[in-house]
Amino acid sequence: MKIEICDVNKAFKQQQVLKQISLTIDTGRIFCLLGASGSGKTTLLRIMMGAIPMDDGSVTIGGTAVPNRQLLSEMGYMPQNEALYEELSVWENLKFFSGLQRLHRQKFEADAVALLQIVDMAACKNKLIRDCSGGMKKRISLAVALIHKPKLLVLDEPTVGVDPVLRRKIWLYLKQLRNEGTTILVTTHAMDEVTQCDDAALLRNGHIIARDTVKNLINQTPDGNIEELFFMDNQSEAEVASC
Image (cartoon, rainbow, N blue to C red; front, side, top):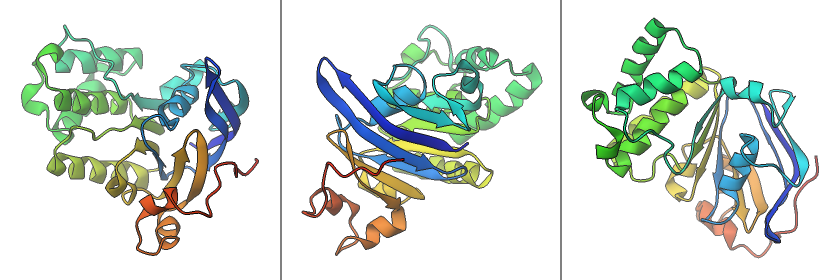
């Protein structure tokens, strides 16, 4: 699903969090929003999901203007803070969220078993969420976001607290989804994860200061370190292309 974001602004209590954000994310790409905490990444995702209104501007997903409840069946969202039911088991959480998407029981069971293996939680499917560690909850949240095989996957810092071996496995699976046509939008503040993506936009204080393919962004720096773009003198916070 193609995403088009045009001149989006958002303020909270007179503090401007997003400042004329414009982006186009093509279908079947892994797109990274890179920035420090407080740069506006999560706010932009919440606007895209219809959780909060934008002050002005526009967002369309697959040609449909946001917000629109009908889009939710096409989207999978993994928030930073896990939205799971503590008193239910891992399996029961997956079953509940699959029910919201009206998945057929047999299809749910086959897909849930496969997803739990991917996120390394198959042996813990009967464990209550309240008894799971933070890293385990991250993995379950990813499985929940994927249970209905969405066309657009929105992941807010999905691998925080996940061990390196599993993180590599997750990225391999995300690339497989990308190759099957899924559009994936990921936020991160980890520089090494940017190289796993196709395209990236760098956010600083609510502005996009750079955006391009990851390969081109790397080539813009003397030592191939994308982080340097945050400090290069020729980057202007006010320069944001219009739609």
